[in-house]
Image (cartoon, rainbow, N blue to C red):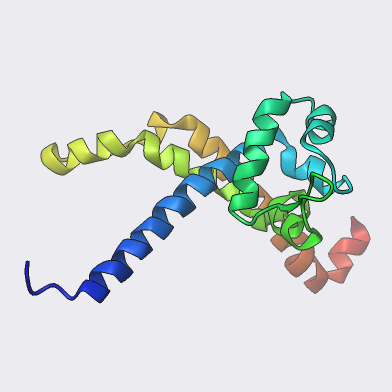
Length: 170
């Protein structure tokens, strides 16, 4: 262990810290998706935590804490002169329904499902076996929702334009 390249140790430690921070931020992004906060903020001018909470019909304290995490993660902007928060149009285009099947906020919901079966998978490393999809039906519902959006977009944007006669008959 004395022959360690300290620069490599430090670089890898930084990488692991980035992974952990990203994982925690991802879970918090999922909260924003599930509570509708991204959708609300996309339709608001820069607003205080109180204003955002009121429009979203959520408890202000929780919204304030969530906003702080989003600011630290550089997801949402904060203006200290007005004590207001805003979601840029660029970020909204990736985190709201406008993104359609490419909504990255919705995809963060996969992580809690994977975490929920982690202990079972670790057990299977020792004993063998697998995890049935029936063990997590909510995951299958989420995946069906994600795929439905993707298939709808593919049909309407790529396939139907290739068949103008079919579109005309519809």
